[in-house]
Image (cartoon, rainbow over all chains, first blue to last red; front, top):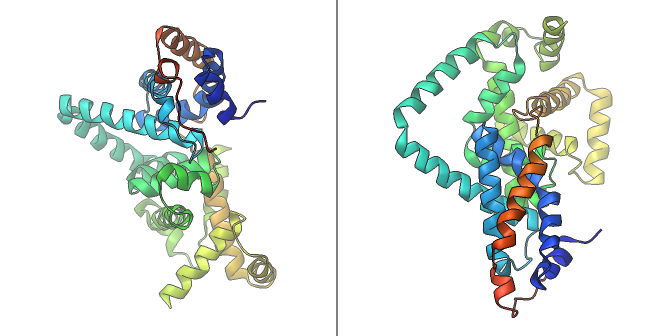
Length: 201
Length: 96
């Protein structure tokens, strides 16, 4: 199997089929990453399409200092931000209503669905921490790759991830609906896990 | 004291991520064997990570049918695109 660098050289020689191989290799990662930001598969599909077309047009600018995946992710991130900015200008009021409804529902679902709670808490993290956490946990990237994508030193990528994890643990333990758990001297997430299994069962 | 706790928690996170030196790994393994409190801290991080992995908002979304279509749409546009690479043979060297 050819490396990304070899495929790019093939594209440079006029082989558009090589670009298709690049698309097939990276489209799943980009679709998931963008869908996490948009929460809308149709929007994600449009953004990823735009990302690859931009990448094709600018491939001569890719110097190979970072992984191709990191470069593509950056284009996708910028494209998503631009879309959000445009959407925000068009519908600021309806967006704030959605957030209010979401947070109310979250509180009601704490005991029934830890996953919903975590999703809500992840959304509240500072962007850099959320990005590091998402790339590590959901996309299973190494800290080296995360650092490339985030344009930061290796240790900073790791620190963002650690802060995110610590914050989430703290929020889970201090959640009002979980007060009875956190006040128990023997409280641990393991207790919660058992409780969750009972709910699931 | 708080700083020290924070450092210890960072070690446990690094341990969980296999991002720790061999020497420190041995120390933490010993703590896991002999300290209930440390075992609990580590287990909580492990469990949190497990839950997080399961809480991927798009984890179960059906991507497969879209990917084939997406690739076809991209290539249909690319087919008609010139692209800077194809227009100018002088390209920068790839250091990857």
